[in-house]
Length: 359
Image (tube, helix red, strand yellow):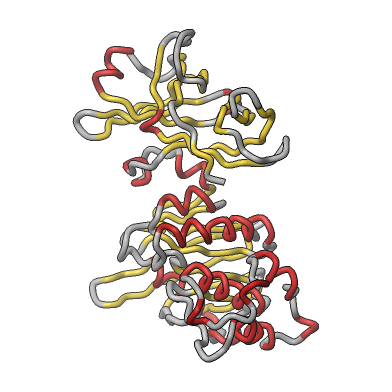
C-alpha cells in the first residue's frame, strides 16, 4: 500500500524540478542521484520548506499540498521529522533536553513513539547527561534522529545524514539506521548520493537525474536494470535477500539460502533463519559454460543468460536469470563474452568470487 504520493514542478534559474513519485507505507525509500540532480530540493518540497508553484502531496490519504485546490499545509503543521546533514542541535541544552524538545511538542494522546523505545533503538541512554559539544559526529546525528522521532512524525525525512561524517562515524551510525528500518512503522525518505548507503539500507529507490525521477521501484528491481545509470557504477551488482541456513564451525563459514541457491559467507553471529542482505558485485562474477569442479571459488550458481549489454569498448554487462527468477549481473570483457559464445537462453555457471554482507 502506498503512503506517500507526490508531484512537484519548480523552476529556479536553469534548474527544473519535475518529479512524480509514489512511496510505500513503511520502510526506507532512498532518493539517489548525482549532486545537483534535485534530491534535496525534492525533500524540501515534501517538507513544505520549498513552495513549488505546481504541486500535489498526499501522506496517508491526507492532502498536505494541492495547488489546483488551493491547499498548502505549512511545515509546522505537517506531521514530519526532518534530519539535516548537520545535526542542528541546541548547543546550550544537554542531550536529554534536546530530545525532550521534540517530545514536548506532541500532546500525550498523540504520541506514536515511546520515549523508552527511541532511547533504546538509538542507544542514547549513556548520552542523556552529555553536552552537545562533547559528542562525536555520529552521536550528534543519533540524537538528531531521536529528536525527530520523538516528535511522533507520520513521515521521517533524512537529508544525507552521513555526508558530513568520516568513514568511522558512518560505520558507527549505519547499524542504527538498519535498526530503524526494522522497527519503524512509518515511511522514511532518505536522500543520498552514496551507493553503499543505498545498498545497505534501502527498501525502495527513487533514481533522479536533472530534476526528474527517471525510475522508481524496489532496490532489487532497479539494481538489476541495465538501462539505468546504476549499471555503470563500479559498486553495482545484485542484492540478494536470504536467510541464514547453517553455520560451519570447522571452516568458520555461514551458509545463506535464497530461492536461487545457497551462498557461503564469513561466519556471522546470527541465529538460523535470520534475514540478511547480500551484495554480489558484477565485477566479482565470472562465467563458465561447464560447472567448475576444481576451483577455489565456493559460490557457484546456475543460471541462463537473459541479456547482454556492452559497457564501453571492452566490457559487457551480462544479466542472468537464476532459479526462482532471481537476476544476477556479471561484468566481463567483450573478448570473454565472444569466446564463450554468450547469447540469451544459454545456460552458464556463475562463479561469485566475493559476497558482501550489507545487512
